[in-house]
Image (cartoon, rainbow, N blue to C red; front, top):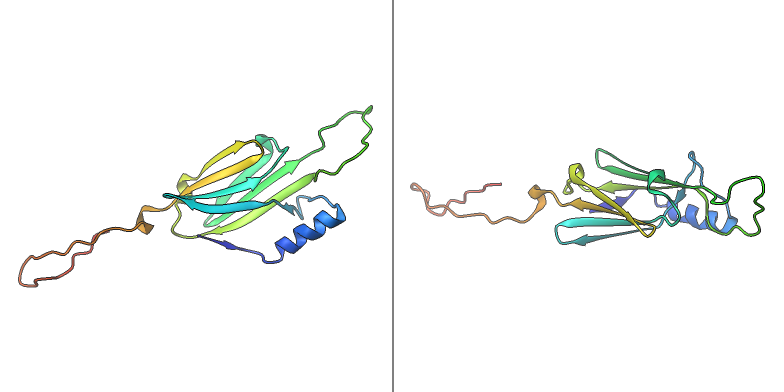
Length: 147
């Protein structure tokens, strides 16, 4: 149902984790994701702990799904002195090529406990359907395909 668009993104993510660099708008970090089919929906879940829903941008252009998010430091002000900072900050992004069999017009998004979950219905034209066999006229056994 989906295709990875850049096979080197996982390597970039590992290098960023090891080097401690943060993602920027021009070179965002990759966010972890799971994808699976549940009934008539295709589900994609992204880990975005500490990101507010207002800082998440979801865009679909043709069949390309792009999710971007930004996590900023929680501590602000002149009197704050950071003692330890291990949580990744900055911009995170993931692009996923969606199959033509998914209905991108009806994507639903929920955000709960740091997980962004997208539900994409499978298009009606992609669902299995029964084909009836008609017996009209002299062409006995002719198949009538409706869809």
